Length: 147
Image (cartoon, rainbow, N blue to C red; front, side, top):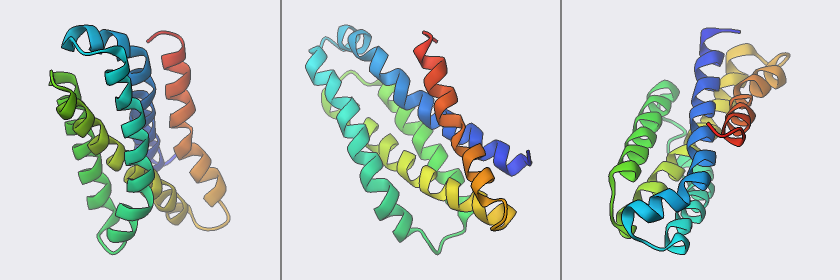
């Protein structure tokens, strides 16, 4: 596996891990912030809304920007959104930081697949995309087992 495909797969692993682990943390976050479980649970839905908006909209807006720069910036903003989520004590900040992270999740997933396909050519693009997206089920499997 090339270094580029490995890096993209690591990105999708990070995206998946942050998405999947959040579900198991809802009760702990609710207790730590003194918010209701239902209120904190909204962070799961708002993240999904961010992903569904970020993938088509932001990817289209950023289509002519250099891929490497967009991917790197998106991952940095994704990390900042998750760091902000971990440090917040208010519901508006919790939801805003999760929405921001979700937006970046959508951008990275959209660009990761097209970047992987372009890196290897049409004859191996399916395998490259599968390799990159292999990070998502790996993260799901890891979080499913209590990590």
